[in-house]
Image (tube, rainbow, N blue to C red; front, side, top):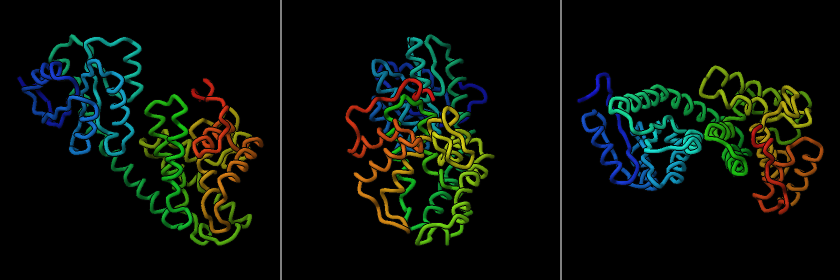
Length: 335
């Protein structure tokens, strides 16, 4: 019998045939259109082909690791980041459940459970997805604004995309959950959004800035913070936008924070931003060779202007790192 108050929706069921057949029986009377994928790889293809899917239900069987990777992919991919994900498991250890939720799952239903409970929890997941759809619209508007701002400056075209790529490659060395990875990806896109109020003649000046012009440039982190602060979607991104020009030694702007007060995500964006600035053409100079970039960044790190550990991680990525560079410490990973 159809449950009262159950709204229509599009579901993707992912898992081996036998467990899914039993689940399809449970869902048979519900007004939900169902898609089926037997493996995580097939599920990714279905998600690309069916943008209307509201909820992914995963019955992993023996494919727990690849199913967790699928959940992480759904949360990190911009086109699916608001799709709800629910795992249904016959048995789930505390360690497995922790890994499932760290990957960004909205729920993990432990069997045996009644049909009524399963339907109610799936309906709740769909409701969450529908409620947050409006947040996606806000993110699209803000991202479009950030891209438009970047387009004002021909010399920084592609800057945010490159910074985002460097940030996510650096992040592979850290044990980040999906929330931090999402914040890092979006923070790289919008970190300079405050430049919307910086005059074009300053952004595109073909020479070094005066002290007065530099003070105007230094306003953009606070301007960006004020733009995004009212939007709950960007709450975890605010530290990146406000502090991506802060320095570990406390000499940055706008707040002059450093040391343990400066979080890890702004440190990562600061290193990626700095590298892109010196390795690409700017109005007042040409791009520097990578070997010179590496030398400059190590010098900046030794002076406390950049996080030395993150600098070495990035230099390894571009092929100029120390092969014996230390992995991130437990303290750094939890920062």
